[in-house]
Each structure stands twice: as C-alpha cells, then as structure tokens.
Amino acid sequence: MTTASTHRGLLFQAVTAGLLATCGLALDTTPVMASEHATMSTVHPIAYRLDACMEEGEWEPEAALSCASEAQQAWQEEVKRLTERLDGVLGKEAREALELSDQAWRKSLDADLALVERYHEQLEEAELGESALLPVSRQLLRNRLLEARVMQLLRLLDGLASLVEEDETTTLPP
Image (cartoon, rainbow, N blue to C red; front, top):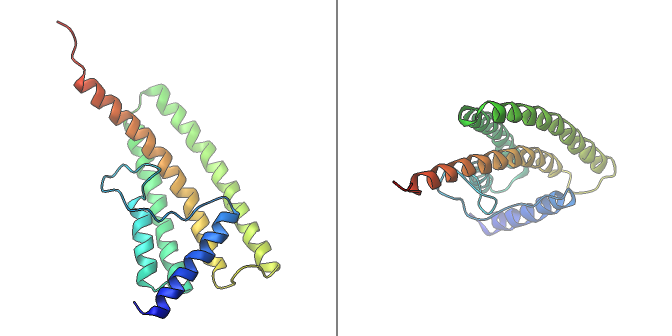
C-alpha cells in the first residue's frame, strides 16, 4: 500500500468514524476473535472481512461502498442463521418470546433504517460531510444495525452454551 493510499485510508476512517459518532455509533477496529461466538469486546468475522475488503480497495469510497454493501448481505444472513439456531435450542415459551422479539426488532430496524436515510438526506441537502463518503456512511450505519442484532443473538447463544457447560461440570451427590 502506498503512502498516499495509507493517508486516504486514515482519512477515510476518521471521516467515517466522525459520521458514525454523530449517530452514536463507533467504528470498532479491535482484533477478531477466533471463535464463532463473539462478544462485545471483539469483532465479528464479517466486520473483520469488511475492514480487509476496504483496505484492499485502498479505502476508496466506491470500493468501500461495494464492500459495505456485500457485508450488509452477510449480516442479514447471519441474523437469519443465528435466529434459526436459537429457535432450535429454546423451549416453547422462549421460542414464542424470540418470535415476538424478532417481530419487534424488525419494526425497530425499519424505523432505524428510515432514520439513517433521512439523516443522510439532510446531510446531503445541507452539503455537510464529505459527499463521496456519505453513501459509505449510510451503508455502514445500516450494517451496524444488523451487527447489533447479531451480537445480541450471539450473547444469548453464549449464555445457553455456558449453562450447558456448567451442567456438565456439576457433579450430583450419590
């Protein structure tokens, strides 16, 4: 990577992080966790792949937008996969609660996506922010909404896994 592309990458990260911060989100650059079950202090493999893709594209806005759009599809698939997996291990009442939670989350997601759109439209109308980066910022915010759901589902699955591990290590008296 050239010095100019490194500079562009740092500038891109700074501007994008600033745009995300105005929406109360952070651009996480911590190392990826090897296990499938990530926690809040780690980066999910999809986020890691997104960062690698954007770096490969030398942080150019067009390449970054393409990478972020591909990541959105991966996040959507991960939400679906984890929801199905959680549904498969929960009891009847918990599955019903998961279904209600999923319905409420989808409504909330729709509202949040509308907010992201209106927010970026307002930035464009006011000619605020770097115009080439606004579509990238918009897409990264969409991704963060999906990533948050993935992380929530992973925490629930991790909680179940730790309960199973505790049961296996507990010895019952004779």
